Length: 189
Length: 220
Image (cartoon, rainbow over all chains, first blue to last red):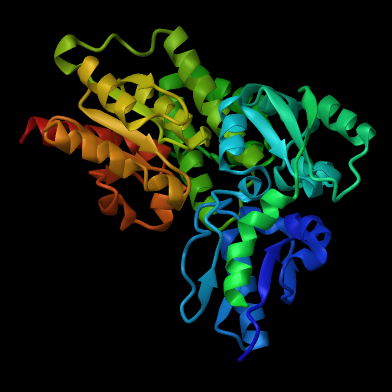
């Protein structure tokens, strides 16, 4: 029987690598986190990978970050963790909701590093419009720091300056992420 | 037939240029009115953007600018007195909000803008609204249509709780449930599954839906 592969958002790469041998080993295929915005393209990628690997089951390690992420793919059994978005994997559902209620814009490490690409290319904002948008919709920025990626203070300052919002580091324990994915990985064993 | 060339406004929105877009709308309104501008040139842009969104060809900035110019145009129309007071016989109140656990406000705000532009009094409860709050507000303000927005499949499931309260309180005939958001566009069968009475293809189409639901209730 073929091993079930993990198809994961690249946003989880540092956390998965940091977990190392503390979780059961499975082949992992990382997809760029830009698929966060394009569920149809994500699904095309999943289909492509499953066809290449000739498997009928995958563990799709994505949150429900866009509408359409939960649509089934005919002929493929997709295993998922019940999380509303990628933030819930690292913060847990309660803390994620608490930040949302405080109107915080929460950034995971990969997006912190790629913040200019995120705001100016993917979101399509000009510098001025970005400030207007962020200040209208959000009250502050939370930087999730799971210690798996170096997040320099200077980068946080740049983000704060670009958005005009206060930018706070929020340390998290990577075990929350491990606990979220472990049940499926164990089941696959 | 409107022969106005809407391409410059569309390009301004595509470039996420709110200032240029508003300047084009101002120019149109000088010859017509802001109310007409909203209907004649802003609404078609919103429709086109909705289609592009389905093809995953829009950015957040474009959607935001489109929402802001709609809001700007409505506010200018109101300031210029282009919307007369609605007579008490025709007074329609809509209660709108994002379903519990949903925090994606852009679409909901747009719906509020286009409902206001169509003469509805809009009570916007914001994000993450509990089912009880939706129903209580509708009852206390004499509203006959609740508009619920949900972006994801998981949060859309929470709409069912509003429908359940309406049923429990025997209000299903008096208060209709309009549902909207990206997930309903992608999965239309979800509307009935969660107890919705109807949906609109985009924010500009929301007044048609709300009017139909209101009249359906009246004509029961």
